[in-house]
Image 1 (cartoon, rainbow, N blue to C red):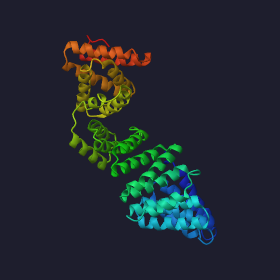
Image 2: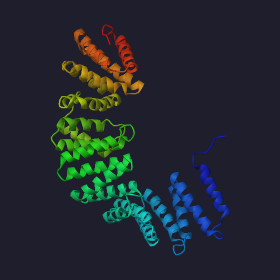
Image 3: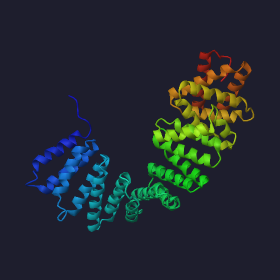
Image 4: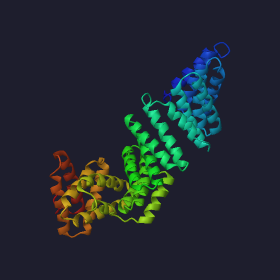
Length: 410
């Protein structure tokens, strides 16, 4: 016997409860069940059925008798209408909900409905600023910091869209602070990204870079790849505007190398690459500018990009790394340490790919250079903890033997 999908039992129980509470005899109980059913169906993606259930709940919760319950149902109905693209209906539902909550003296609930109204207004091309302003005034940061941060973020974004970047900046700075306080990493990333764009629009590229670096840090590549790619592409734009071309190139390439790149983000990053150019080994221009303490972070992001790239691109980047490390003998062991530290953080299969691509790149060099590179890596490995040292040493030794480079000592 095959079980149903998660949530099916809850929906079945709610449907059974409707039969136990017919609307003509138990209107309040029936309406309450319809409300919960609508929410459950929306969570299952059954939006048309959810809207039908919530419409009944709104009708049965008479606003003159049960205004708060009516408002809750209207707010949920608006959320479903927004998900189905019926933005006019959603705006009407959120407006009704906000009014009922206001009359009932529930400012936090009113603020949440007004926030939803702002989203619907923006999506239907209406006036979102006023709704977000009212929501921000009502959502007390001491009580609901995450919601307050979201209201400040969306108000700032709406002002930025209205070509008012200087008005947007203080709101977005508040949103960053509130999201940090609430430990809301996605919210922090969104606020910092919008703050960076506001600074960029106002002609402050260095401030934009600082904000967008914060946005990238809040959106890990493997956890939120879409947001990571967007923040990286915007960072590339800010870096280009600030004249830091080598870093702009690297950020744009990393945006394009994300596991998930929304088309507009990819187009923006590709345009930057087209303007500034890109060849394998772009990382060296950045490492040559950076202090040593920043090398590990820079190389880690690049190695993650190389590992996920097509084989030809990965091999080209590994070849550029080998050549670059050999060309910098005075810093080679420190550079090798940064490279090997990035490798050891990869999953086993990815580590194996990178090691084999690196060893394969040694074929382009004579025996002396091969031994020199292996020796640089071997001396860097001595700085690692024993388990990491052995894992890397074994991986390189096996790959070298397989490639016929057994004379190199790792």
